[in-house]
Image (cartoon, rainbow, N blue to C red; front, side, top):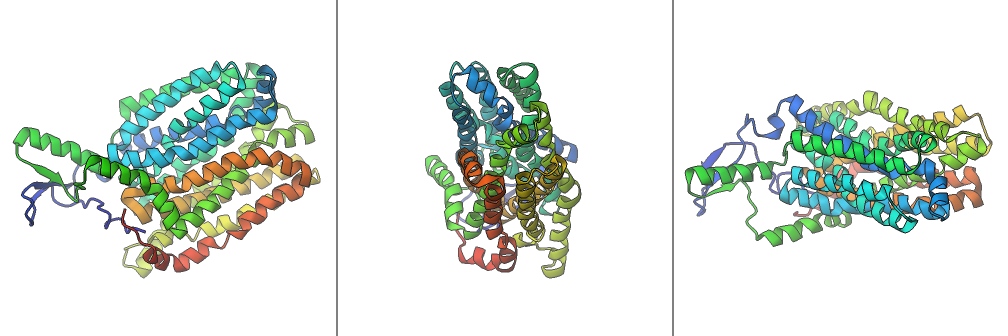
Length: 485
């Protein structure tokens, strides 16, 4: 893995200087207290950027699950089966994972802002033909394409936060941002249930159209470019126009444009398949997402059939994991920075290692299988609904703990290419998260909810030692498999 500077990450030193080699061009870089350096922006400006991209990261996963309470209604309206309608979720979630493979490296070539605004504008517009879908084929196809463009908030959010915040303060902010990809699937069925029950399934997508267009408009008005090389490139052009002469950006990559673009497009997959830690953590996250979507798409059957809940009541069940998310972000996630800073002072004179992000992941590693087994067997034996919902609170706690620590680990390991590193993990988890729920109903039908959900618990348990192992041996593994990006 990269240490974040070897790959050409910009140093915040002098604004202009002369090179010491044969290149006579003046160097442009940030000064230590440069107002244009995103890490020196006022906190309010940073948080506005975070709020806009966090809302993007909420809305695309929200769209992935918001229509699930209306699956039966959609099937009846479009003359198809409910299993086929579930394919609309599968296509969306799979392309939600494929999108970052392309959109993350593009943001490291063209800048964050252009990608956010272009892709989310398309995502907002695509909600209109989705609402007007005449048949299930159109519904599935349009949702798959919209999933690709809607992934932009997930693809680049971690990179944008890395652009603006120092490692010592990043985890707390990232925790609130990360609520988006998790709260979206959680809140979607709640809102969708209300809309489906009182209006119709098509109004789910009209609602998404309105909200997405409002967020896109806010992006055009208030979202600022945060990627340092793009900001410095703009500064370079201004200097060349106003002062004449030639300038270059510190650590500038002078390869031809198409060579750089091809290299950036390969970056996420190179990271995924050459870094054992990233691959292992990606598999772990994939299991979590596959489990999550398998449960979410079956809450209607579990609580509707077994407990006699209405669509609105089923939607309220999703607040269980949502409560776990909020408790974790409020109380546990800030400890990620605290532990990181403590270990940095104790062992490395404040020069932290990515592995110092991992201790809290062990909490999630225990909570996830325990909460799944709790849910599995209380549902199997028809325990009171409150007992089953309480287990989902702890599942939500475990999810946030694992995902936040892992994502921060990626960011610290790859820094400048944080978006590509996160995309490497996202593609795997989204594809598995999209495909596994297709088979979940058959698993639960044949094995029952007890053993069916327990299978997910045992699978996650197999990877539970990963944080402890990588905390101990991660630095050596990163050094052994170091790559130049």
